[in-house]
Amino acid sequence: MQELNDVYDEHRSPTGRVHRRGTAWKPGEYGLVVCVWVYDGHGHLLLTRRAKGKSFAGTWENSGGAVQAGETSRQAVARELFEETGIRAKPEEFELLQSDQEKNTFYDHYCLKRRVGLADIVLLPSETDDVMWASFGKVRWMIRVGKICRIIGRQYLRLEKELKARNVPKLMR
Image (cartoon, rainbow, N blue to C red; front, top):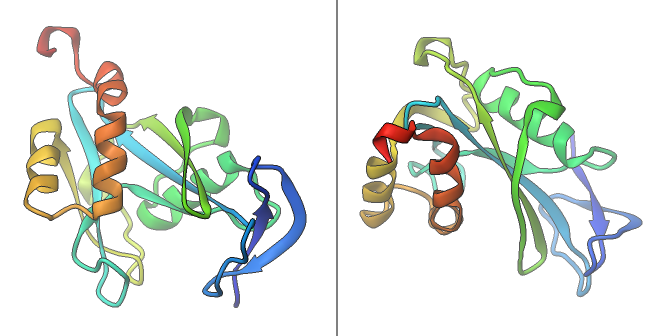
């Protein structure tokens, strides 16, 4: 089944057109991607490893993906998190951290507090092949040595302060 995404203009207004995933974007067309940092409230972030056969295979990342045609950003982040980890959350449970843009893509970065055991995570084999809880220090180390997808690493570094403010108990800051 082919995935369709809504097309936005440079002001992030919907154009009423759709884009077929895997085809080139035309000049002036933009897509929307959502990302979520799941945190446990004790200084750890949930990371998944990209499966073989995917771009950046073997690197670690947070959950996320393209918003499908007709979806809101919050609906998409709830769907993506469930598809990639089996974690269920209502769209209104996600906290928007930041929106930004790179090239032809708008990004909405969310966070969600969830304490879940690794044994309860359900990975989607075509998307992810491993999962871990990582401390902020470990995430920084993983970025330095290239274990985290470059794009995700750049995004993380922009959001780290806001994530720490929500995730690290005051005694640990």
